[in-house]
Image (cartoon, rainbow, N blue to C red):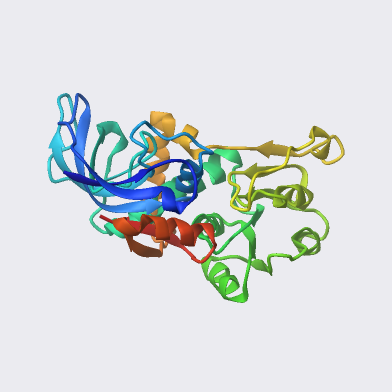
Length: 323
C-alpha cells in the first residue's frame, strides 16, 4: 500500500491530504519505484492552484529518487535494486512508491546522495535548458538572475559562473545576498523594491545584459524587459509573484529588439532524447561539484508545509520530501 499526497480540489495548501493507494503491478515498459526522496518545485504549486492540470489521480510532483522494486515486461537496462532518479511526466511524485515508464529513470552515480539529487534534478535540467537551449551562455556573457538565492537561482548562478559568465543577481534580503555571492554572483541587487533596472544599467554601463531569467512574474517581467540589450533574450519561466499581465509586442520592439521566451521544462523533458542528454549533463555537473546543492527536508506528510514555505519565500536553496 503506497502512501500518497492527494489534491482534494484546486486551491490552497489545505487541499492537500495524506491518503493510501493500491498499486497495480508495473505494466509493459514500466518499473515500480520505492521512493527515498521527492523534490518540491514551484510547478507543484501551479498544479495545486489549478494553473497546470493534474492527472486523474490528483497526485502532484515531478521528480524523485528511489530504488527499483519491480520490473514490468520489456524493460531493458534496469534491474531490481538499482538506484535511479527521474523527472517529468507522468506527474505523481508525492508518493512513497509508484509505477512509471522505465525510460524516465537514470541510474545514479554512487557519489551523489539521494537527497541532493531529488532536491535539484528538475531545477538542474531547467538550468541546462536555460543556459544552452534558450540562450547559449559562455565566457563573456552577462546574465541577470532573479531570486538568485533560491533553488533554481543558485543553480543557474553556479553553472553560468562556471561557464565564464558574469552573473547579476537580485535577492530580497542581505542574508540572501550572501548566499547569491557564495554561489558565484558577481553583483547582487538587494531589496524587493529595488530599482533593479537602473542598477543593471549602471553595472553594464548602459548596455544591458545578454539574457535575463525571470521566474518572478507579476509586474517584475515588464521591468525585466528594460534590463536586456538589443537582440537579447528575456526568459520568463515562472510567476511566483502572481499572474503575468499581457505583454504588448511593442514593448519588445522594434526599438528594443528583444526576444521573449516562455520555455517549459516539462515540454523540454517530453522530448526523450533531449531529456536524457540534459539529465546526464546535470548529473555530471553535480558529480564535478559545479552544482553544489543544499536542500531542506520535510516529511511526506508535511508536503503542505513545504509548499507553504516555498510559496511564502521562507526558504533558500531546494526542498525535498522524505516518504
